[in-house]
Structure formats: structure tokens, C-alpha cells
Image (cartoon, rainbow, N blue to C red):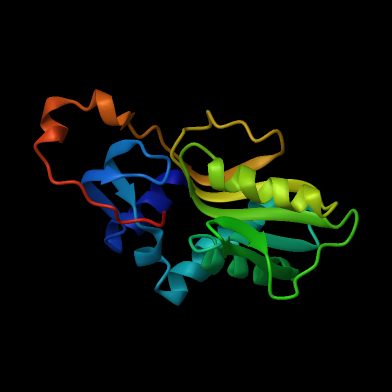
Length: 188
């Protein structure tokens, strides 16, 4: 799957949004990828999951780990496509945690799957938890890399789309963006 084909899926499903958005990172943007809108359709999930799985198959993970909420659907599908186990992290007292009896064995080969990355904070938090449990992170797979490859996670990283989406600090908004009502479409 090419980046243009993946972007077309987002356009066709209404998952590519234009406006004024506050991202999880606290930055503002004119565009937002609402992956949940694309991933509500199982044929789309299967297509995106197969494309990601094909890109990371050679990493030979034994388990896919995704941070809640955004990475759950695509992470589970990538794991299904790879024939591996799937577990997820979820918030506990405002931070991600390994819960529900999930365990990571020493040296277990972990692939982290997330829907969208802008600054990489949620993926890094997931990586920290995997390492605290002595997992071996073999790579990261993303549907959308909003940093256009600028986020360096120090492990092999694959994405279906690399895009440079302009972001702004809250105190450095352009005049046109200041005039548009702010939306918080993602998770916090």
C-alpha cells in the first residue's frame, strides 16, 4: 500500500479532518487524522492491518502491544495478520499501565503498534513499560507518522503514511487559526 492509497482511505472514510485541533501533545494543527472513523469499517481495518503486517513481518515479533485507545483496533489486526499474541496498555491513574493480567516475558519479542504519532509520547511511554517488563522491542508500526519521520524511536519504525503536518505551540498560533473554534477530537 502506498502513502497515497492510505491517505485516500482516510479521505474516503471522512477520517481526514480540516479545522483547528488540539493534539494530545498540546500543539495545535489545521489537520487531524481521526483513525477511529476509518477503523470502524472492518474491511478497512483488514486492508491497513495487512499492509502494516507486511512491512514488519521480518522483525518476527511474538507479541503486539498497543496503547489504548487509538492503537487497539489496528494493533489487534496486525497481530492477527502476523499470527501473534496481542495485548494492550490502558490508563490507570492518568498513565498507561499493563493491566488485566497481561504479562511480558523476559526477552519477549514485542512490536508496538499505534495509529498516529505526532511527537511520539504515547509510543515512548509504551516502550518504557515494555522495557520495565524486560521485553525486547523489535520495532514500531504506525498507520500515520505526522512527523514525516522526524520522531526517532531508536528502533525500526514503519508507517503507512509519513506526512509533515504543520503544528503550532499554543502561544504561536497563526491569525487564521485563532479565528477557528478549537476542537479536541482525539484522546487525551
